[in-house]
Length: 280
Image 1 (cartoon, rainbow, N blue to C red):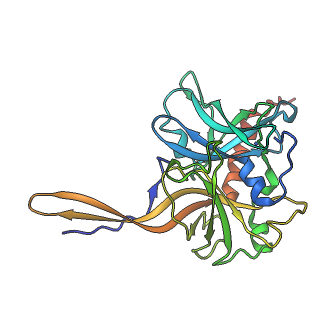
Image 2 (cartoon, rainbow, N blue to C red; image 1 turned 180 degrees about the horizontal axis):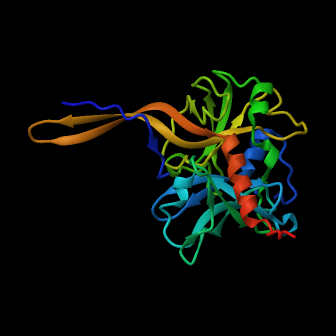
């Protein structure tokens, strides 16, 4: 019998308002979170409004997720799940095809070192979707100001094992806490360990910092500290005279890439769509 410890496994199986104003920060993040699905796998993404490069009047925003989510999707579109509010207060599921390739070439922009990708989406006018502002993405100054240290509480939004909260397709929100140290300075510490069990479908989900006013009706924006990109597990390889097999033991730990690198990826996207300027 032989045992092997495998620390990281990628989770390959891996919205603008229609008039309803989210009353708290968790609801704001929930309304910006979408399910990305196709026949081969499922994952999570969320909507962000960059500082430039989109037409807000046309309801354009960016879909943020893990790069390894887009890579295996065949074809040129990736359906995402949105929600359509009904007069009786319920919601109806609404699928939206998002173009991720054109003539076989990727339309998304990926971070050169980290598992982050963004692609532009145009939202229908009737869906309940509230993209988050760019400034909701935490930078190093925010982490220090908010005293993000070991044990701080987070909320992670996603679709673990394809599970949806209800037939309308809302994501699940789960508690997590910071399990690794340190988180700053950010460049040498791009990843955070979270005390939360991750499953296929969680990849690309936003991780929000819980603060004293997270559930109060106050102004301001949520603070996103990162997105889920993987999980930690122990792989036990068993070999006998007649059999070889691997048993996966989840360690109830997730891996998130810091929001700083989402900021950088959005910056790369903005550069890619900026009008070319000619010199004199």
